[in-house]
Length: 301
Image 1 (cartoon, one colour):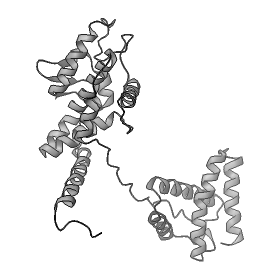
Image 2 (cartoon, helix red, strand yellow):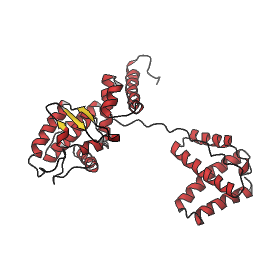
Image 3 (tube, helix red, strand yellow):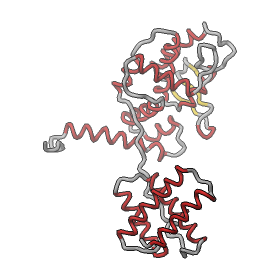
Image 4 (spheres, one colour):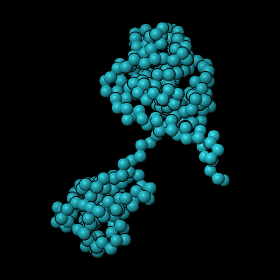
C-alpha cells in the first residue's frame, strides 16, 4: 500500500482520537480491523483506497470467514471499514463506500445445551434436607415439568396453580401472552410438599408461589443462585443455567412425541421456526444412536 494511503488511515485514527473522543480500546479495534483489510490490499497489489471495489470487500470478508472468524467479529470489521470509508468520502479521497452493502455471513445458530434423562434424574432425585431445599426442588421440578421460562417461573403466584387439575396458568408470558400448561406428577408432589411448608412461613400476604425465607417473592437472579448452590451441594460438577431445564423439557418431549406443534404451544413460541431448533437436537440424538448401532456406520479406526 502506498504511503499516501497509509497517511489516510493514520488521519482517520487521529480523527477518532481527537475529534470523536473515541476510547483507546475503540481506536485499537479500528486499527486492528482495518489492518486486516490493509494486508488484503497488499496481497492483491492494491495501492489506493479508491481502487477497492465491493467485490474486494466481499472477497476479504469471505477469506476472514474461512479463517474461522465469527460472524459477530466480521460485522464489527465491516462497521469499521464503513466508518473509514465515510471519512475518506468526506476528505474526497474516495468516490464511494465499497463496504456499504456488504453483509457478514450469517452466524450459525447455537444449539441450546440440554441434560439427558439420567442427568435430570440425578439433579431432581438428590433429596432435600431443609425447607428451602424443599422449595428449590419444587421450583426445579416445575421448571422441567412445564418448560417454563425463568421469568415465568419467578412470576407465578399461588392463584396460578391448580394442583387437583394438575395445571398452571402463565399470565406473563413473552409478548404478554398467557397459556395453560400441564404439571407432571413429580412436580405436583414436590409442590404439595412445598406448599405445606410455605404455610408455616411469614408469607401470608405474599401472593408469590415461591418465596424467600423472609416471605418475599423470589426473583430470577435468586433462582439462578439457588440452582448453582443446589448443584454444588449435590456434587453436580456441570454449570447449569435454569433455562437448561426448559431446553431439556423441549428436547425430551419432542424426542418422545415428534409433535412439533404441541411443543411450540407448550413453550409459548409465537413462531414455529424458534421451536424447530429442537429438531436439530433430536437429530443429533438419532445420529448418535445410528453411529453406535448401525453396522456400516462405524468409522474405521
